[in-house]
Image (cartoon, one colour):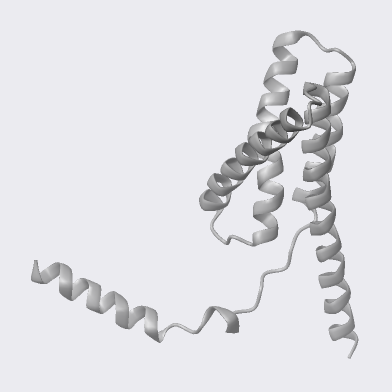
Length: 147
């Protein structure tokens, strides 16, 4: 038992010696995940509109709905750890899907294609915000290099 307490005390000292998170420079953002989200949104809408065979459509749409919208928002939160970002992204995707479905039921406008369009629009908006953030960061970096 004393070993556990001593190791916790050592860990506390080690964490208190590290610099604060605000003093650590933010890593540059990459525009590629946002672009992939935008392309996936367009692709999943095309799969539904072209009336692709059922099993392929089900796999593509369910895979997209389970991962893409939440990951777009999880990247906006800037979670540094990859697995944590993925778990938060999946949870956000499922919550967003449920909220959109409940909203459609409440408004008496239930339509699976409409729900998919709303979710892809929300995910695309998050991806566009991330692209804008990347562009602003790139501009700031270029301005600082020029000075």
